[in-house]
Image (cartoon, rainbow, N blue to C red; front, top):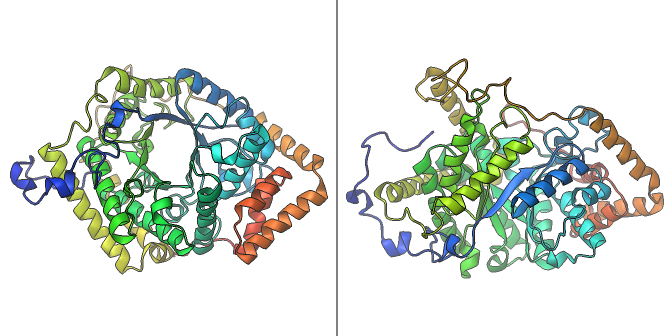
Length: 527
């Protein structure tokens, strides 16, 4: 839902009278980067085309990855199942029925090795959407790279590792916020030293928007979390001019076309000023907000699912005109199930058509100077700054999470948006208007949805138990004890977790050792 006023319904030069071109807009590739982080943008290098994929067992996901690479994706993006996300092995009682359902099941180094079998990790960029167990999945990835003979320093990619948004928007947390922040900074510090081409955190506004926030809230809460991570890195001695170059962001590309373009511009301008004025970053690359965008899953409808192809194309165009560095397009059938191979291909072709047929990449920031774009950029910046000020008054990002302040703000907006849909004042084509029995646009029953073989869960558990049976018990126990010691004495957790992965400790076993030290988060904010 747009945050812009409904009247007047046009922008004019007078709306821009407070804008200073050099200070507020500038040239592409120059501070404050409103017009993009590169002077030549896509004329020099196209955005990275990623397709988010992962389901069932590692072997199934590996086949999908290979297919996508053959179809022209330029980077992989891994989805993990819920047990993996919250630190449970596939044979844990709480994992029953969820193994491989919304992503790939990863229990051990053997699963990770199968997932990337035949994929050269020194030549393919990988993005992993994982948070509470990000440190374990990064360790497993690093262990597989070493098994392939690839140096950690050669790896490129991103681990999401944004735990703060889990408490306010998504819910796949394990440990309390403050020890979770320690785990995040351990990953950041390790990557700064050992994996310089790796982005150790991707601050996610996407899930905040999916939970129901406005565009201004998405900017404000995401950048507030970003500030908290930078401050935590500074507190452990990292240089913002160095760490700032490896932090990335992840935003939603939503439905309100012009507002979404403006949102990306406003976020870049605000982040540049935060890094310069609050953290003293002087290196331009440390001031730049680089981001991945994904089209908005929450806007997809099960009714007339072919309409989703149009929604995704328009949202993707907004992300491109807004200057994204990489992009994922959702499948048309994702309101029904995981995307089929056909739907994933259509989603990828959407990006390829945008790049190669529309000409939008031939001009650097073609929307700059448009009255509505510039006025909306400034309006979103003003609104987001006010929200950040209120967040600071509530004690800052961590305190606002612990009290439930941010979650309540998002829930209120989500409720208002749903009321508008229910009342018909917000039109959703095919849902509350233009409903037809046989539109030729697909129905729940006519779309060939993805289905997963129920036997895969049993097979995954059998593989997991075979790993446990074949390992050295003494090496495994020693490695887990080293993880426990590091958690307690404050030393960096990544090296002992990599060793534990190599000794065939499972994801759930490592997560449980950390649970014993840090405890588990109990959400009391809504009570």
